[in-house]
View 1 (spheres, rainbow, N blue to C red):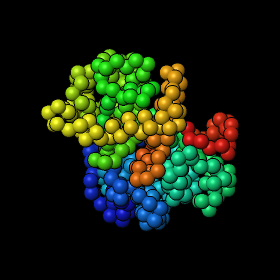
View 2 (spheres, rainbow, N blue to C red; view 1 turned 135 degrees about the vertical axis):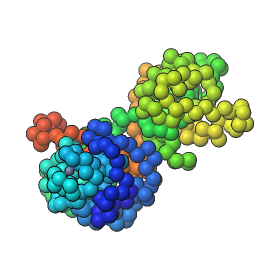
View 3 (spheres, protein in one colour; view 1 turned 60 degrees about the horizontal axis):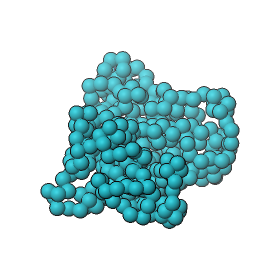
View 4 (spheres, helix red, strand yellow; view 1 turned 90 degrees about the vertical axis):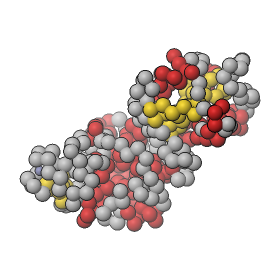
Length: 347
Ligand SMILES: [Zn+2]
């Protein structure tokens, strides 16, 4: 969906319904280089001006194609600064209305660049740092942009995982890792869910401690971690059997039938388990009390979901998606919640 403003509104990919911000459809498998840029050089080529940014936002807000909210017309053209005019009834629609970008006097390209820089940094950026890399606006402007983006980022954090998702459990708290049925001893059981948007590529993770391997423990975990109706891949364990009845597209990978080891059949979740184990061994010398485990799992999740590499482009895409869905925050509300303006950890 690379933005081509001049060809965009000519009836391609039109749909039958208008998507309001809260109902924006989700591109389940955004592809690097097709749905979002992968590198800064690509970013600059994709978004050379405001029109290209508008076209991109139109795609995010109306993923199934534009439709006029007044007359149902399927054609529109862009005017200045993020407005669309319906070709049939001349109704004007703002691309940014009802989003965190509503009423902004900052060019969309600056917003996009800020979102790009924010999603590239593991620990976020400061307003001063952002002002410097953008080379635009005042410190106050950069601070306001950052604060609004962070709100969208928090929502992104809380958004359930999108399918396909691999789900499994692992033991944490000791050097040995075992399979179900073995005595866990002092170890804790951690449920893991990870997005696998493409083979060999991992998206976001969600982890939590669970009491046991029963369906009573596993189903609530999946319900919390994964978007309803998503494709969920598990092994053949009976605790996952009710997933289909719960509305998920359940794909059971039978390790016994395929003859593959677990790391071959479900490489994503196996990799996350290994990373978690190594991180706990390396950082915490393997000794994590159960009482502290939840905090460590949160930190691991935060770090994992912020890691660099190819995923950062996807994070940029998801952040923009959140931006066109997040309701506007008036400046005063932001200032009132202001506490530590230049210590900009995300979230
Ligand atoms: Zn119309």
